[in-house]
Amino acid sequence: MAIRRIKSFFQLDAAGGIVLALAAVAAMIVANSPLSVWYEGFIHAPVAVQIGDFAIAKDAHHWINDGLMAIFFFLVGLELKREVLIGELSNVKQIILPAGAALGGMIMPAIVYLLFNYNEPEFWKGWAIPAATDIAFALGILSLLGNRVPNSLKVFLVSIAIFDDIGAILIIALFYTSDLSLQSLAVAGLCLPALYFLNRRNVTRITPYLFIGVIMWIAVLKSGIHATLAGVVLALFIPMFDRTDPEHSPVEELEHDLHNTVAFGILPLFAFANSGISLEGAGIAELFHSVPLGIAAGLFIGKQLGIMIMCWLIFKLGISTMPRGMNFKQIYGASLLCGVGFTMSLFIGGLAFAGENTLFDERLGIIMGSIVSGVVGYFMLKVSLKDNVSGTTVDLTRPH
Image (tube, rainbow, N blue to C red):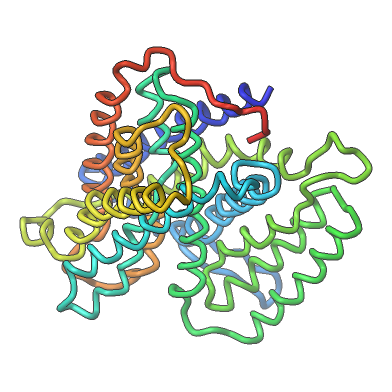
């Protein structure tokens, strides 16, 4: 049963990665065609929600990034909670290697980016853009290699991405906040004991959590902290188990219900709204500006260096051992795939340079770095897996 579940998980995320890629390509085509006027009209269309004197008025682009992406972060929070309690991250021995790899894979890209922009302090705030991994894209590329991919490699890649998500969430909370509103933060804070009360009372119906979650999302939106973080916090209070029915898991049920909506709806819409880069008037200077070039180098060079150095150190110090069915060539291929940063990189890039009239487009670097990392990673893994015809089986008796 556990093996079927993990295979289904990878198949869904791989398919989601393909849809995500199609949405990004479609945005690029539309933004550089006669339909570009329609595209700009769509992402800047004003949308307002008003109750009495209270109103939230933003354009469609902000509703997608601040609103719909909160649902994506909610799903990330659910997955993190499940992994920590009963999944791959519940065993300390199993998390040392991917946790160390993820840490190196976040530090080194930031260093590479800063090296490209060391003499431009105003651009330093983009340091976190190449630090994250897009698991849907990475698994989509991995799925092209078929059943030769050992399950241990898939779990290793997913575990790195999970720690990347944790790191990205912390980075957004600590470094990408505007002026704080203490009044709004106080309202958000009052939601926490209410959610805790529901959890302790074993309330397994989702409606009360969502009602408080919406209030918390509005408060966080108004506070200066990015509103999507409310989704992560809300997820942590959803009960993992129903104490009156051990077979029922509200967290896993919500994951199942939301996965297709997020993978095939929200994320492709986010990709479409954020990937429409107009190349009109773009020249060599824009393409090789230190910001997009630093991002691309961070994703392609920084990721692989950081992950491989940390893995080598962990093995050298005897802290952890090589996962069964894997070798260094496969770890290197996976480290290249981790350079596909797309979704979270676009998200952080929007926070870092939002509303600024710059001479560059950071999205060019994200797309360049992600494409090169994905292509080279695919061929590296194809070579390293050529003798692995049917894939290597690992112990997957624990639920994923």
